Length: 609
Image 1 (cartoon, one colour):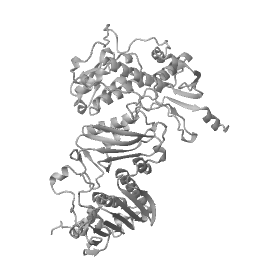
Image 2 (image 1 turned 120 degrees about the vertical axis):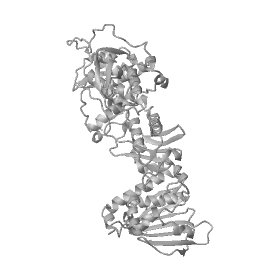
Image 3 (image 1 turned 135 degrees about the vertical axis):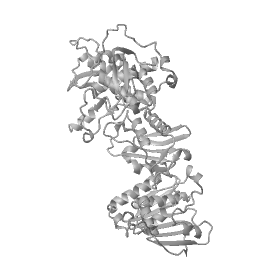
């Protein structure tokens, strides 16, 4: 007996609706997209019970004829595409022809529409998949779609809906997103018969994105605008220097379509690595314009997921657009109200922060021509080769020598930096307290020294092209996975630039023959070198400048004086003057190196004001 059977049309449509219509907000999104594709300049939305009882979308678009109205609720019926070639360059928000058919299968749907210039309009009703006749209907130009009793006859779907308030909040977010993406369109939203949102056509973008970001973020917005490879990014990102957001407020639009993409998120996260304090979340609204043929929006029926033809180009566009917007914000981190101050996390000695690999304080744009050279042609005039082949991997040092690493960075401090600075002392053998310009300033000694070393490395790379290196008497062999060896040549060039000379050793090993000269006598140098080599091998897809940032961050962290080390007064003065003289504000991991507390703030804390 045959077990496979063809499902009835109404059941098949209900199953298909599960992909497109998950909740009231997803139905609302589809209806608003249809209105925008119909060239509407005004859209009015009404909701009852968060969209469970009613979703009504009224627009003044081009409207539909009787023939179009009959077809609009059929599966895969659309006016957006005609051929397979159209799928390669989609310029409309909708194109699948599934939305109304899916909604009609799980609700009571009414569509009334009149075309421009027509004497009257037409109305069509569908009751949970049962299609009624098309009837004449007096109505203004445009289209009105009413969705009632969503999921009433599909309890398996209805039971997963949240409270009316939660579903309303999701619908509200949909409207806010479209308000941001279509400033030429006016939007009005009613909830339970009351107007709750009105966004006039032509309103400034900042006015439209405030509901998405909140007033706190609006005070810190930086404009983003950049073009690259025929693409453009624009919008705003919040400078997180004095901003504390514990939830994500970051929104992406691709050709004005709200999208979600790991590539976009990573690009912003990496660009903010030098600014975003650990625990904070980014905020911004970013609009990307790309040739439609370079993007695949036909990944999922919801059209939220996208695929890029060249993710690397997208990453660079977003990364550099956001980085450019923030790179001039080099201000000291100021202490906020007491309730907002989080406990300082104890840093593990010598352990670099994996969450970020770059800092906004330093520009490490290196000549791309260097990477076009063969390894043998790499600059060698500044390489310090060992003249004594008996020098072991562990350089002999005097253990009784208590000379701090900080003293190595004192010689170029600007004399004027010490003006008005009075060292108070050291707290917890980790923080330097000093007075400057009438403010109490706390300096993180490890982060500060790390930032200075990073800047020193950067300057040497800029002027010499490579870091000085020290040959190893006994080469170090590092195990590597075979898949890491694919981008091995580029990896070796990046490593050579930071003073690590390495080469393949079999199919799954790398042998290191030299290390950065400054590491030759450092503690944990073996682990640092191995971690650096592995990081470069594992990330061949990253831009070479980003790999260099990450590597220099790791080296700086390893060499910097550690928290818990007692410093002499002269060493504290040298470190403070170096930081003030060179203008560094953040360590390579993005942490601020100093916190300022004004006298007024202290008076408030002691209730003197």
